[in-house]
Length: 272
Length: 251
Image (cartoon, rainbow over all chains, first blue to last red; front, top):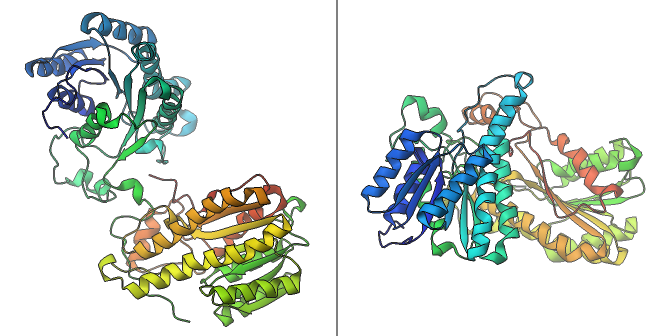
């Protein structure tokens, strides 16, 4: 992938949370493939920086400050995209708090903390899907890529809102895929594993990350483009017959997960 | 599982296949719930131990020395159970030959033996017992597997494939035989041991990784087996359920 041959030439992509990390990596990869990019997130400086880098590549870009937990702001963002860029072909729901929750006993979690976690990671994706879907149906095509997490497929100690919301994102993707399959709209879901968004190239694990990296079969954290290339695939026409799919991208973590890395006994067959 | 809802009183079960634990613990659990139990395997010492457990629960036990990798022996096994018990309500496929070696070093003989023991045995037993269950218009098939039916562990390639094969057999037969009143389910056990594990570095490494920080005891599989074998599960089929101390749930 990332052939530079304009896989997404003429396409308009909205990426939420597109100012940093995975979202920014996907914005730049898709721009490189010819797409015009709308980045929508709360941090104005970050999304404007991404938009500048996209424009430097010769594409159109819009940075629209958006809090995805506010459906009014989401609707305005989509309307502005249509008004100023002229359409939407692909939506990437990437906004979310990566385990932003304060570790505390369950009984001390407030309603507000619960709703914030669910709203940011699940309701925001729903609002964005809802805001683009009529447009997708009317134009007869569209693609949605939802960024979930391995935390939405398995449990992680004390991870109440993030993992639960991401599990919701996974099934929201399936429901939308089934509901709009005959409208030529593809909805797929990526479940990243541990991604180090600070580095664009794989780094040797530092002591701080060694403990976690040890449980990743490939022995390293993911980098943003590991996920970005999958996003690009799902945004391209290569995925036109793929919908309702769940794509873990996790260095092999979910394939195992019943033993730590390094557990590799030799067990002879019992003779009787 | 003393409740009447889950009683297996008046039912007959067949636990077939060689394994370290299941003849004994599956047999004991089914008998405790009220079933008479036939136990078939090659290992005669384990057969006798298992029969002892069944009789200890006050139920009838028969032992049938059988190599379940051999279709003709399986056919005779089924004929003998039907001759003595009259019917087979519950089939437990219990073959579990554990084996682990780096993939490049696995010989063809080892590969075939693991697949024959763990997978082909289930094929033979389901086919031979299935005919009987179709005539009865009812039956319960429960395949005892490992979580490795769905996950990989280094060096366990042949074992993982054999378990995954039986899991898919479970799903395929569930669809094919639903119309005959036969339910087909599988239980995925986690890391099991009859004795408390301590000491060995590989075991310590593994135990630290387990949510409950301990191995399961094979008797902890029993209640789920009884549930799946009971009359309460007519509408419950094609499923793979774990008894694993949450090891399959965590990230």
